[in-house]
Length: 148
Length: 83
Image 1 (tube, one colour):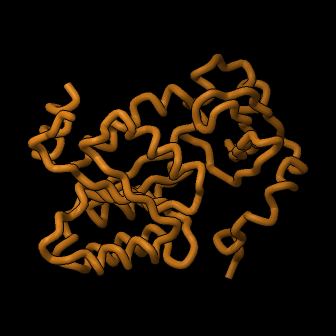
Image 2 (cartoon, rainbow over the protein chains, first blue to last red):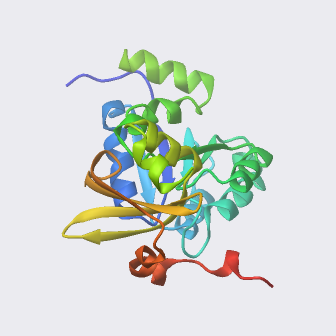
């Protein structure tokens, strides 16, 4: 078995749509075993996870949030994260079904990316690279080095 | 843009336009296939998938509001209700 010297980066993804959760796991399959995607069914669950993350634990390299979710929506998760010093600069992407201007502006105001969910193979083909592009430069460099 | 002019667009121009300008309305399943409904300008575009968000089997374009019927239970009216 080949071991890697690089850490296994964690991507957190919250979405109440089971098909979308499965889709992103498949999208990032080429990046495993260097990237691990951890999925949550609603915004409250990801907030609980982040709040319970031990101080010595690695912070996620990227957090992907659907906007319309039960209990706590993606925008409120983003606001909650930005109010916590540890996650104030964690890369976050709002991943949603429509390119609504007000949602894009909200993402910009909270230092987050904004990606519309793909509707066909043309857009799906490049989505993993677009997500990785939102990670910190060092993470990006390591992921691309591993996958090249 | 009308239903007719949208229908004259070639793939992937049609889905590209829908991706940029469409407003998601809802999702349903029929015989195991996922179907997504979008509003585009003053008409509706319904996409049926062979593989979810990847291979499209059918695109239905209409300005008949009856297409909304199966999605009504999941449409959030909070944002369109005048307060």
